[in-house]
Image 1: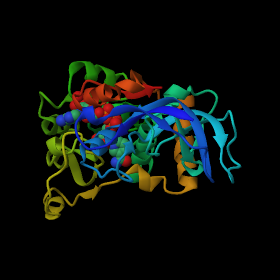
Image 2: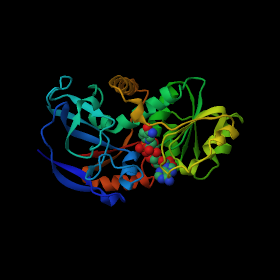
Image 3: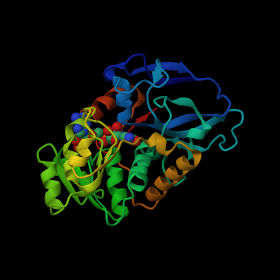
Length: 326
Ligand code: NDP
């Protein structure tokens, strides 16, 4: 079967994302063939495109890790999915395309009450919010936390989820518009980190105490200042580098800043087993179905415009989640 896909043949800027027609084989053993309704765009896609992260499996590479659609065929040995099922995945390279094959073990079924375009935008970002708030650090009513890039894809989901867990939620964002958006999605306080000193503001908000945990996906620009926002023995969760990678640093810094804990997690090690994948996806579906977390699909692009989607994400022009539509 023919499918349009965004194929990368080299690393570089958004212009290396090229629309091509590809041939999709019948699904192999253990695989499911799906027709996409929406494919999520994630910051990690830009790291792979630019060369910051290695290209999984080498070139040619079809970009994209997240998507949702309908099953159109199943390969031998697949019993848990059948034609017509509504499915989604948070982690499957080769996402930016109309039709694809994917191992059944990467897929989950989407409840009828969740639209597939919403599912296609939220699996990677929402399951990231899930493990960060529930497993990397157990957020609860006593927790005071700082979440950078609060109006972003992960940020808007995390703010609402953290609020639902009862936490005091402080965020940062890069414009007044984004600040208003974050405040409407769970954040009690939002700091403009482009114009204000966020360390001083966090101290002010917490009465000098600092926060229990900082979730930092900005990387270079917020390091090492994020560490100065923490209470003694607080936890620094460095989970991304939208502004560029962190410099190497001496571990003794954690001692100097107050016996801090540090972790550098990735979703992929939190959903490594089928049970973890299902548990994380079901937790996400539950908070979305209950209305505790509303997914803001704020940017929609045609598949052919994937390069524009990357440029807008990297130029801080987006908020909430971003999808490509086949
Ligand atoms: P976002 O929608 O959050 O986009 C990134 C945001 O980062 C921008 O909108 C911008 O918000 C902020 N930012 C700050 N400095 C810069 C800069 N110099 N250049 C560009 N953006 C900047 O993206 P995602 O929701 O897809 O991902 C958020 C982060 O989480 C990424 O760093 C990603 O790699 C990471 N991530 C990590 C995962 C993990 O398991 N480790 C899984 C999923 C995502 P503003 O304008 O408000 O500053």
